[in-house]
Length: 106
Image (cartoon, rainbow, N blue to C red; front, side, top):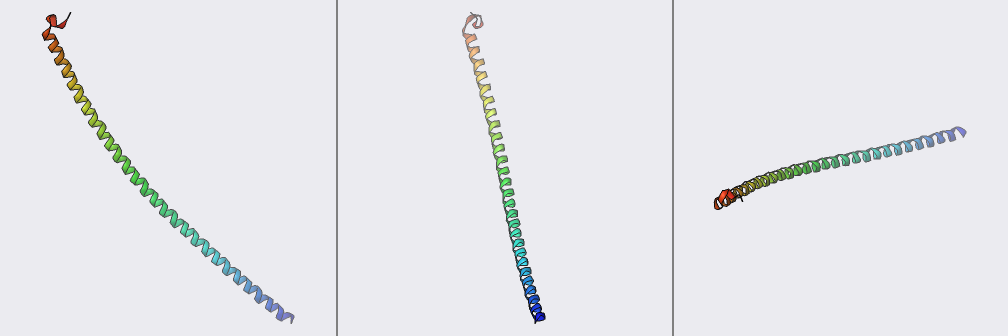
């Protein structure tokens, strides 16, 4: 009987080991699936962030170019206005000089 009980005990241990092995394989497969899902999500998030950075970079470059154009246009406008004011000053001096004896000197 002892031999039969030992055989039964061996079969029970083999079944227990097989169950534990299956459990470990399932846990490993579940872990692999979670790692794969996390890696896939991280890759998608990375791609989204790269696209966002690229879009923001383009927007910044466009805004910078627009600002530079506005500054240049304003600079040209101020230069034109300054030339007009200088011409007005010269014309007013000429009028004052022409209307006063001794070239406008007191």
